[in-house]
Length: 135
Image 1 (cartoon, rainbow, N blue to C red):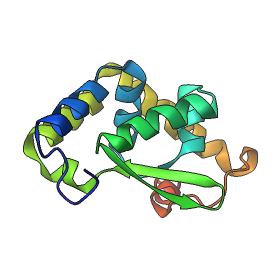
Image 2 (image 1 turned 180 degrees about the vertical axis):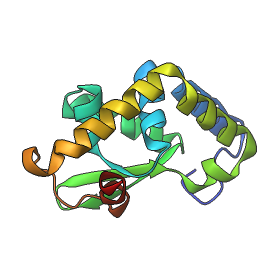
Image 3 (image 1 turned 90 degrees about the vertical axis):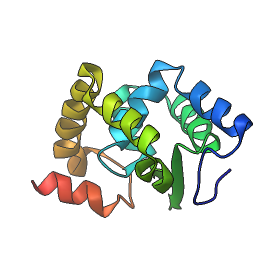
C-alpha cells in the first residue's frame, strides 16, 4: 500500500472497499473529487470535530483512497493519484461525486470558501482552493 499503484492484493482491496462502508467517508471522497482540501475545510463543511475528520481521513489514507501532506499545523488531502487512473475506482469516485449528497456538500463547500478568508485561521491553503474561490 501507499505506493503509486493502490489496491494491490486481496487484503488491500478488501480494506479499500470497507472504507466505502461509511457515509462520512463517502462524503469526504465526494468533496475531494474536486481537488485538494485542508482538513479544516472538510471539518467546516461536514460539521465534524477535528478528531472525527482526522480519524476518517486516516482510514481513507491507510486504504489508499487519499494522500496527505502537512502544511504548517494543518493536513491537506487529495485523492490518491492511482484512484483517478484506475477505471473501476475512478468510476466509483465519479458516482460518489454525482450523488445528491455530494452535490449539496459541494455547494456548502463553495459557500464556505467564499467566506473563509475573513473567518478562518487555517493557513497554507492549497492553490486549488484559491483558484476555485476566484471563479
